[in-house]
Length: 487
Ligand SMILES: Cc1ncc(COP(=O)(O)O)c(C=O)c1O
Image (tube, rainbow, N blue to C red; front, side, top):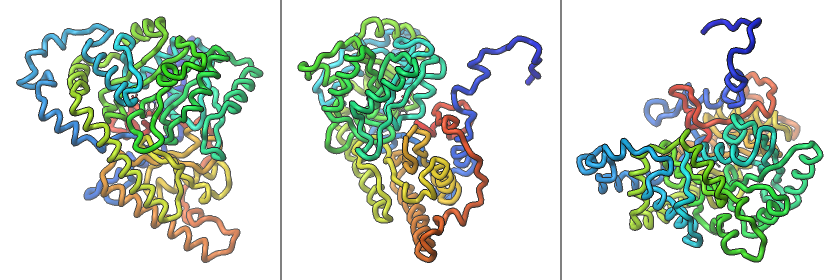
């Protein structure tokens, strides 16, 4: 690499020279620890177990079986190759009509068929990641802001903010009411930002929530609709975990509120849904993201923008065939929910046995684990300190709450659907040993003693800025689990 001459005007853009993506942050120590020492049951049994990855691997066998029974769905098989030329040439950014029809139908199905989606409004993008950015480009200009309830998916800082220059302003939600979004929290964030002369263009919600795994109830969704209509701002509803809900209460899409709750005023032009097949189907590698906007101009503009991140026709073709197979979808969705419920029960049951509680949840691919009792002090420094011990001593990569902009230290997101049953048991065993050892130490010493792990720490901890701590999927680092780490 050449040396930059400081007398010359800047040769590269601010984006190229800046670290808005967040990858250069010290946070990645955790992923690096996993990268250097990844767990493998036989080849590296003492390695780091990856529980920072919101990936759904529990139904891969069902998809694989479907593919084997439907070889014509791929254009690279004897049975499907006759369509190869046509598909390889197709490049219309509206997408294959059969793909849009199948996705619209699937979106209805994952919302209990209580609402319908118009295939003409289905816009594709490179995952929900691309969908968020395109939507942000359409709703706000550089320097304008979107409100986002905390804790929220750290990738939003990159997806909606990095290249658009849009700001994200947190709406503080707290553990005292299980992090539920309230009208008061919305009003407070809105008023505070107005005092700071920030121009608001919208509110971004995630339902079901990453990292909480909870669903928003009807009243909260009605509050949200009323709020955005009163303030005349947009609503982006990220619903990419729609079909991961495995027990009551069931998931309610924002689409249901605007279609059925006609007693509240709603200008549909303000509402936009982001969806993807990364979680519900377990296809993050296919990069199938969807923008579903009720606003014609946004549909039109995001569709033009989708040229920057189209889903390949080969993938569209396969997905169209798979999601149009009603028998398959009808079996797949309940079975997926059943397997997630079972995994949730096993994992949270194992944690409860050693006295670790999680926020009660019924969706997503993770739990929101409460380790406040293990913090040395109620600070984010202590949280990061404990997190480093969990990675380096317990050898499990989990994600600290601060990276989700959580307002209270001591919460950690732990993913449980990216591994098999045996690895879950190994992770639980490690957690058990850690907590047992910790308890023994605490019992054998006076009240003022520090938790066990402090005496055992061989880590040098540097103070860190919180906005420095950012997780990022799709990292370009070759061979790095960071690519997967933060979805
Ligand atoms: C809430 C949320 N939105 C968006 C994304 C990005 O999804 P995709 O892989 O479809 O880009 C994720 C990934 O974890 C997520 O959790």
